[in-house]
Image (cartoon, rainbow, N blue to C red; front, side, top):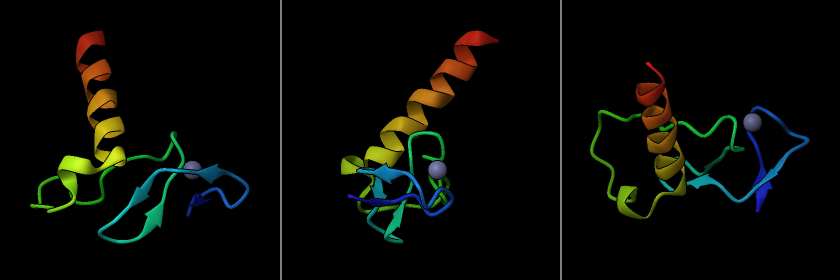
Length: 60
Ligand SMILES: [Zn+2]
């Protein structure tokens, strides 16, 4: 567990293993979605990010 880099008052389990950034659910966005990342297959941030994108697509 760690604190969100944008919300120091929020504890989060989401962490980017590439940059070691903690991000809360609201902030969970891949920093380099276009770049290859060896951690991606196991990345909880990527998972949340994909879900968010899917919801945006479904809504439009
Ligand atoms: Zn946050």
